[in-house]
Length: 416
Image (cartoon, rainbow, N blue to C red; front, side, top):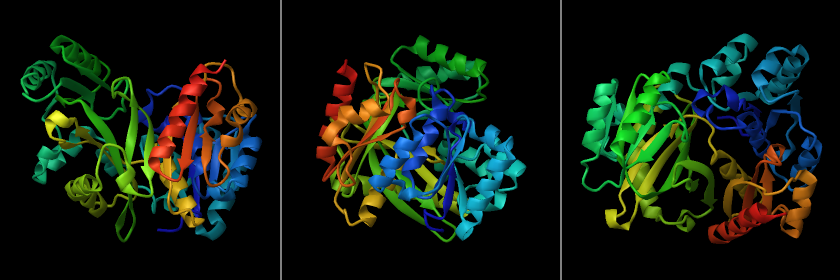
C-alpha cells in the first residue's frame, strides 16, 4: 500500500450510519488532522492556530489542509466545484489515494458522483463487503461457519419479537453471565445496545430496535469485563497487524471514551502480551476471510477479557471495518517512532470541561504540560469546545500516560 503521506483524508463521519447516534459527530472529522497526508475538514475559528501548533510539534506531517464551510463534508464538496478541483489536484500529487472514514451507501454515492472510485479502492472495500464486516450478526454467522463460534459470548440472533422473548429467557439462564446484552446488528454503542439483568427491560429494548427498523437483533450473555481492540491494515498483497489498545469506557462499559496504546504490548493495563497474541490467532480466520474477499483498508476487532472469577476468558464482540478511535493514537505512535522516539505510551479520551473554554484557554490551562513534540498533552478536536475536547497524553510508558490523562480529565471537569 502506498505510504500514509500519499493520501488525502476526507472523514465525513456523519455519513457513516453505524455512528449516527453520537452527538456532535460531524466535528470529529478534525481527528484526521493527526494523521499523515492531506486532509479536508470543516472550518472553525481555531483552525489556523491549531494547525500551527500541530506543525510545531510535528504531528500530521504538515500535510496540506483544505476547508469546507461546515462539517457535512460530502455535501459541501459536491456543491463546490472549486473545492473539488483542489482535491483533484491533491490526489494527482504522487498519485495519492483517497481515504474515507468508512464505506457505506452514502460514501459509495459520494465516490460515484465525484468520479473518485479509482482513487479510493486501494484503501476501501466494496460496499457489500463493508456492510458485512460491520454487521454483528454476519460476523457471528461467519465465525460459526469457520468453526470458531465460541470466540463470541453465548448468543442468539432473532428476527421476530416472539424469538426475542425466547432468546432473552435463554440468555438469562446462562450460568456464568452477569447480565443480558441486547444489541442492534449495525449500530454503535449507546442507543444501539443495552445491558440489563431484567428480562422485561431486555425485551422492551429489543422491541424498540425492531420498531426502529432493525431486521435482526442479537441477544447474548454479558460479563463484567475490561475492553480491548486490535487493528489491522488490509493491503492488496497482504495484511499487517497494527497493534492492540485498551479501551477507556464509561457508563458501566456502555460508552467508549478513548484508548490506551503503547510501543510495548506488555504495558497495556489488565492484559498480557500472550493473551493479545492468543486473541490475534483466534481472530485470524475472520481477518483472512475478509482480506481474501477483497476488503482493503482499516479493520478493527473489539474484544473483552472477563473478570477474575471467570478465569480471564477472552471473547470477541464486533468488528469495525473503518477508521476507529484507536487509529489516531496508533498513527501518532508511528510518527513518534519515525522520529526516533521508540518507547512511548499514549492514553487518549474525550474530556468535558466544566467551564467555557476555547483553544487559547485550553493552551493556557495545560501550560508547560502541553505536548512539546516528545511528551505532554496533545489536544484534538478542539473544535468541539466548550462542550468537549480530546486529550492525548504522551509519555515514556503507558502507566505514566494513564496518570497524566487521569489528572487532566479530572482537572478539566473541575475547572471553574
